[in-house]
Length: 183
View (cartoon, rainbow, N blue to C red):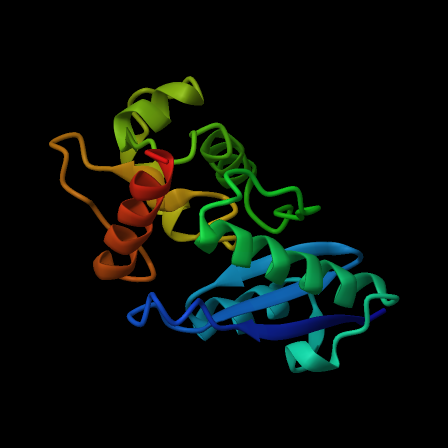
């Protein structure tokens, strides 16, 4: 059976003009995608054997489970960018990843707002200290950017490392969190 997922776009606040539009998709009452790039959107939906119905945020209906998840996500993203939300409380589904990826993504959820850890530390968190490159790869496949905070992982030398949204976006997110953390 093909499930109808629902997708929409989110435009970060205008005070962060360098941040591009994000793509959100919900299915079965859970968020399955939040990313800067449309490339992952189609790949994930194909993998999940789903077809998403696209709706503008203004068309979303709070009484429809998948649409309600998208509205809740938009509200929490606005709070995140305003600096009033440090943890997200949205039902997530990242079961489309491998067991290893799911382990890494679960570990990412433990990184505090405004903090960073190295890829080596991330590997240690999942009891695979030599798997730091594999952890970096799993980071790059994270389907729920921001909520699963892969932007908080940096290189061991303190450099920013990679980010699928681009280094400029990663830096902007880390700067935003550090600024709000000091409040």
